Length: 385
Image (cartoon, rainbow, N blue to C red; front, side, top):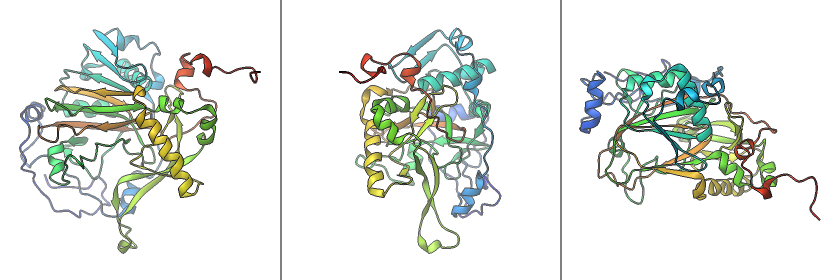
């Protein structure tokens, strides 16, 4: 299958290629069972855009996002009653569900799962028998599926991204001192007009040791800030940039430039109505209206709050055939490369884009909404004498 653009305006700038790296056996068995055509090589590579304006045009118009979690039954009884076990992995973030197959969920259960993800940030399902096609269908149920112009796809199924570190290492060498690109705290697709909502990563092949993924809660990171500091960043906007650079068509000699979009530093989730800190060290560039030095001081502090408070994080140990579904609007994540690339790893990922980020001054925090505030955090009628 020759590469083709995800947008017809994109001119192919890279030659067709067939990757000959051998697929891990569990991945190969899953793809063959799903009827994926591997005869033209694996993975499939869309034509990579070269110019900045081409990428801006891919999704340049706002659309109405229908938030599945917002229409869910708040009790989530259809989902939770069907599970054999539901375990919260930490107080603030992460839940594991047993006894359910994602491919068999009813529409009501899918809506309730979206709400659970919005509340718990990331939800895990082990022992999943799910094909790339079924994974894509679930993503489409949740909204507009993102097709990334820079990353490999499952042949015949645009929107199912291939996560295969061994292949990525042939393009960008990874080592102990400089691990792979996902081995840093980040949030996916912050440069989009309507950035990522729910991401579903299914790993069919995992290392026997290491290779955990970590997530941190944006709800809780915001609550780690003092009420007075929250007032400083509430309503502020920042510039978020793409992971990949492109050339300016009119001035290519100027060198690579990034897609940039302006979004609020603190956003409100449309399903829960809770405030969350929305920054990440990899792709939040600067705060609008501040000098660069001022912006750096504030952003570096926010990054530290998000990354260094281990009580608002979950670290997940993968097993083969496990799915993780997380909400990029309220989390950052980090894929540990501690297995050093010495073992095979392979998975497929589908990301659904969400709404245009928004802020509401009167929105509550998560713990405030759930009645979990400590005594010293409760509002008083006036100054204490």
